[in-house]
Structure formats: C-alpha cells, structure tokens
Image 1: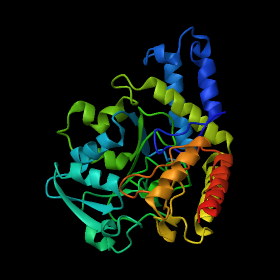
Image 2: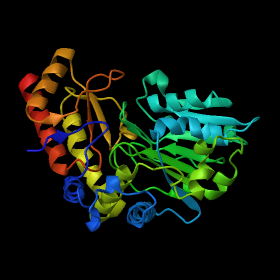
Image 3: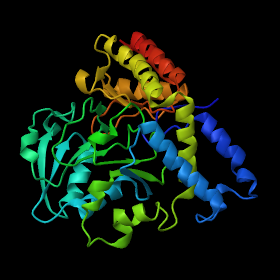
Length: 359
C-alpha cells in the first residue's frame, strides 16, 4: 500500500508517472540507455526537452510572445536572478508580503537595489492575502512581486492585481492547480517539486518584451537572455527532472487539463475544509475564508498534546507529512495535483473520527 502523501515538498508525484518512469528507466525509447545517460545535445533528449516546453505552453495557454525556460537552483536562485536582471539603478522593486517566501525574495532583492513593501499581512501572522494597497503607488517601479500561494501559512491569491508595472509571481506551490491568465504577468517562476515533478528543475515563463529590458551587466549563466537564446541548453540541464516534468504534464493533459484539475482540487480541498468547519471549533483554520489555499490546508487543534496524538495516529494510518510548520504549528495537509481525491476524503474522515473521540 502506498502512503497518503501530504508532504509540502518534495511532494507526491502521480503514480502513473512513476510507473512509466520505472518502465523506461533502463532503456528509454529503445536507445539502450536511461534518459539520465543521454547526451543533452542528442536528438532523443531534445525531443523530451521540447515536448515539456510545448506541453506547458498548451496547458497554461502561454502565448508566443513568452519564453519558457528550464533552469536550476530552485525558486531561491530566482530571488536573486530577478533583481540582478531587472532592478535598475533609480528604480524600486515593490513587494506584497504574504509569507516566508515573500520575505526571502525581498531579502535578496535588497542586495541589488531599492525595494519597497507595498502591503503585508505579517502582523496577522500571514493569515490572509493583503488587500490594503494602492497600485497607484507603484508607478515607474521596476516590477511588483507576489507569491501566489503560501505553503507555510495556507493562503492563496484568489484574484491577481492588475499591475501597471511588470507583475512577477512565484508560483512554485500552485502552478497548474487552477486556470490563470498568463498575460497578466511579465514573469512566472516555479520550482518543480510541488506540482510539476521532482526537485531539480525550475520553470520560468517570461514575456519577451520584459526580457529585452533586462540589464546587460549580468554574469552569463545568471542572465535570462543566455538561456532564452539557447533553448535552456546553454549548460547541461537537469535532464531527468525535465523528463519527469514532461511526464507529469502529459498526465495533467490526460486528466482533462488544468480546468478539470482545478475542479478536482476544489473537491479535494472541500473535503478537508468541511471537516475543519464542521468540527465545532475543534480544528481551527489558520487562513481566513477569503484567502484559503487549494494546495496547503493549515489548521490547529485545541492543545499541543492533542496535536501530537493526532499526528501519531495519522502516521499509523499512513497519512504522511501532516505536521505544520513551526511558524504556525498544528497541522498542514498539502493537497497538490498528484494527491488523489481518495487520500483527501480519507483524511477528512479520520479528522472527524479523531474529533469525535477526543472532544
């Protein structure tokens, strides 16, 4: 029996994807080699690489005036690369702060130029997505940065700002979980290890016009133009991670695309939020109702003792990865695309049973 995997990341990968990778591991496409052994300059690997690119474009509706890049270093490297490329002297990078990853992105940007916090929910321990800001205040700024989903706090943007300056979003933990309008953004970036596949590859979707505005005095490997000009093959890419990404994207397409994935995710999250809301206060959601995440559901129990008991009994039933982050405490269920509905329904049932036995 496979575990009910609610890990926050690296996270669940669809079982059919794992089984196909297992089948192809030793002999990929009759090459007599694993995909890990292929030259990244070979035709066999090039097909994998380009397939991942075209599938992502298809699933997200990415227009032709955007580049799709496969980079390394995770979202954490993007925190530095973005201001290194786009924060010019005399300009300000604006941030809407909604969690720990926003904090990290801001910290790195400060090394390269002027920054400004446009809005923040930090004083409320990030229980909600900030709404108390005016976009009139960002005119002439370099860019506006947001984090679309906050894994630690369980909050998610429901509607994205209509920014008058380039809008950049870290979508590491909710890309492909729901339909989005890519054209609202000048850049989207996402580490793969939540919804896209295994760790090791980072997807960057960047508008060509924005890319052309980048600074020139940037080290070659850290310059987005370098990777755009070389189809993300300037240096050896994380070939196996990109192969796995392509398989995950094929799986998403087989599920009916992002529109149907969103419907399934809403149903999955609904099971668990209903268990919280119908618990007569035994479980308390960290996020406010208007900011609840489809991907990371955070909640607390009446006491630390009950939390430990809950986690222990959950583990005994093969529910894995439910401990909350220390910033919030309590529990967190990460219900990424690959987590099946059955797992979420089973968790909700267990939550109700535990509440009835311990309240």
